[in-house]
Length: 134
Ligand SMILES: C[S@@+](CC[C@H](N)C(=O)[O-])C[C@H]1O[C@@H](n2cnc3c(N)ncnc32)[C@H](O)[C@@H]1O
Ligand SMILES: [Zn+2]
Image 1 (cartoon, rainbow, N blue to C red):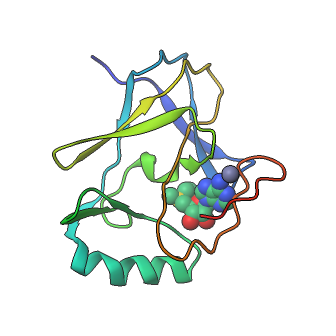
Image 2 (cartoon, rainbow, N blue to C red):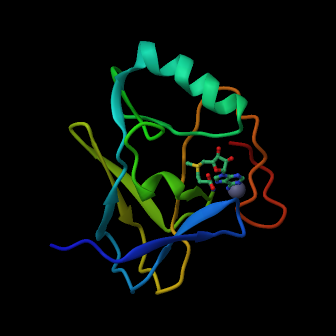
């Protein structure tokens, strides 16, 4: 199966986001979240360094591993968070697949729920008046 065409563009949510360039059926695999595989005991320092700049690049894979999209990441690192997203992530071994959780139209911004843990200092701007933090 080929992956759908997507592109990075300015987003109303934050900075750059990732948008569908074609219609995407529910559950289709869209892209894998690339990044250096690092052990969680090493990723925490990186996470803090990125967070100090307001960025979340480290994706927790499982109890042992994380992916650091700050090193060797692909366009998936620009997918913004939404509390009512149109994508979900599926972890297969240490691969993080971003998949459609509903049918997506060409031009829609792709979002998934970051499910962040910890301090959650960033106010969520996924929609007007969203009360949550990332
Ligand atoms: C993985 S990056 C996403 C790409 C980011 N928009 C950019 O241009 O670099 C994650 C960062 O985007 C911002 N972000 C993503 N979703 C957001 C949301 N719903 N509300 C506010 N900021 C968000 C936060 O600053 C977060 O640290
Ligand atoms: Zn939100």
